[in-house]
Image (cartoon, rainbow over all chains, first blue to last red; front, side, top):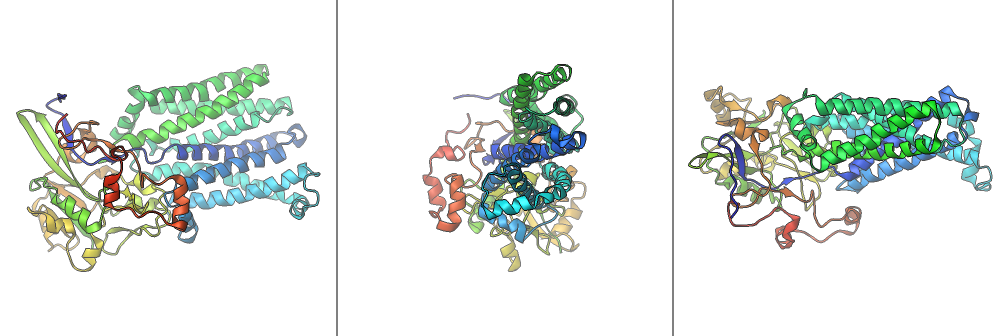
Length: 315
Length: 252
């Protein structure tokens, strides 16, 4: 028989029921990651269009909403799949409860996806006049070309709350102290700029040098500040006892420690130095590598931050 | 009217009668609990003591679960009870993430969130919650905390200074009080929960949230095509590694 020696001053649980482990798992991580890309490409795309002429950004007009459309649908799919009663998702629209950030977010994300779908259809058929030349839908999309420019400012405006609302859901998850920080809002916005620029770097082959330089700058600035905030959370003991106990899952070594530092190196440190180097001397291959590591790193970092607060017993 | 609960931990002897009564009254499936009694030991033999803490939904006045629920499946009743409408619940588990007391579970039969409702169905009929009736030492006291003549109000008045709530720093204003509790019994960070350590069965974690035999695809098809009815026997027949360990053999 194995014996355990427990210090006299320590209390131990000797009989209790099994507690749930991780409730929101990899599907929610994927959901947040995909949403960051879906909104990020719009935000960074808008920034590029403000700074540069359309001719310098070939294909951005149709590629930007298309990437956003794909990743928003991944986000919506995994939101639905993670529900234990997915067919009742309709209740969010039939019986909305407006104090819930989940409700507000679902409505905004649905509207945003609708607008992005219209933009993607218009711009795709505009850019490919030979595709489905006799299809009535394709032709009516081509006729509505001007609508793209009308909708675009609204989508840029809407992309901000759509990317931020997950931080409000986390703030409403009051059992998880680690997420009860205003910094989560900034982290969400920086994540969107980080993966938005990373995604556009991968399709920016024929763009002007200045546009590519701007993309590298956005990536460098966003990963720098995001990394700084993670380090602040990691090293400074300014939070509650619960948040400190949560961070112990990273501090004390083990799989989450490895994953966290892997995420920091891949997602933040490598892209930062490559992007800064790229500002002096352009290297397309290295920039694409940096974009890929930023995408992987963000997923890993979000995964750690999502799971560790759920490891703490609440009662 | 604001219904509240008080547990006098000086009286509780850890018989788990309330736990069993709750299970039976509310047909709570195996591996799920609306009310549980936790044993906490302190000290080194022979100078040891054991405390028993019944844990259930706190029916907070400022309930985070109610606030985060996207479809109002969790809602307040006029008497202050935080009730659940399982027919509306979408199973997003937002409430499980929001409740600071870990009082909400995903029912493995219905795949919806569920929790203690202070036996709202019994209260509506003028009866006491099942756990109150079952308690042999009357450690569970239930009543209207806004009525100063009620038993619970008088008990609170008589024990002024010794009445505590769990995690007051969360500003949830719980309507569930404890007398005779301490940091080590009410604060989950003040005691160790050693995985595998145990008295009668091992301290462990659930491996599933909701129905362990339900794939993601089943979640979509079941409401249309139906599914095999699960009852408590089905859960007993399931392989043990789907649930908490039931190993016997006492202390490890």
